[in-house]
Length: 198
Length: 198
Image (tube, rainbow over all chains, first blue to last red):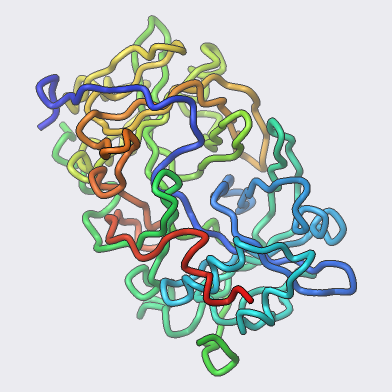
């Protein structure tokens, strides 16, 4: 199917932090006086397999960055579509002035392996211990080793693994400043490309 | 809507590199003799706004890692759904033994700002200059400053920005080892959460 005839005319849209898809991660930390806090992060992703690690970039002035420099721990909480309003709100206000758990009604649960709260209502949560801080430009990238992943029983498939179709994954569109959902499975990995194997 | 009554029973699924959504990035580099090469990466994302930067984690033994240590440049190519087979193939074989551009029919185009090829047929491409290498566990995280983003004219909206609905975004499900497609826009950022604003 490919070939030069399928090449679109490309236009520069400038040097921008832009990619598809971008995640909607809700980062949980304990602040001063063990107050549980959450913020939203779209700059992040899995960054290593051994040990399993996730990286998230955070404005160094945000409360979360201060918190995790103290506790060396955080959670990554994956919201489902039905918690879009609660998630969005957590990106609108600061944990310095707001108790976002209380205001949204979300429930902080103490993690099993690290001193950080996770969001009880969210379908998938990662418990992480900070393993590195990287300065990148004006921001800070925090790397966390994933010590455990917890998933709601109801989103597990018959194989005991998280079932994509049951999660209700949300992604962030930074250009349109909007959220979008995921649709359907379109192919198997290491299989869809077999037609090019000799 | 939230509240303890909505909390699912959580079960540990172990320490795994797992998150939703994960991207399907196609990384373009020049190898020895300026041979254009591409690989697929799901461990990565935007990692800074100033300067705009993207990070991608790569097995240090992969040809791409060798290439970009030489050239200090790479592209991040966002495939659309219609190039799923070509994309998947690029994750099945190594650039050491294969000319993936030629075998898939995809077209290498020399970037404007960096010595790295982009995929002519893909709707959005990022031209990146390597700004850091981070060792994370057994892998290497490469950070690139995004010097330009190019998008196909046909996926731009009337505002001149990439229009999510026209791209055909693909995501990777690491648990099910499969790809899934974008669904629909479900809310505006900094708006969906207004109901919790006092």
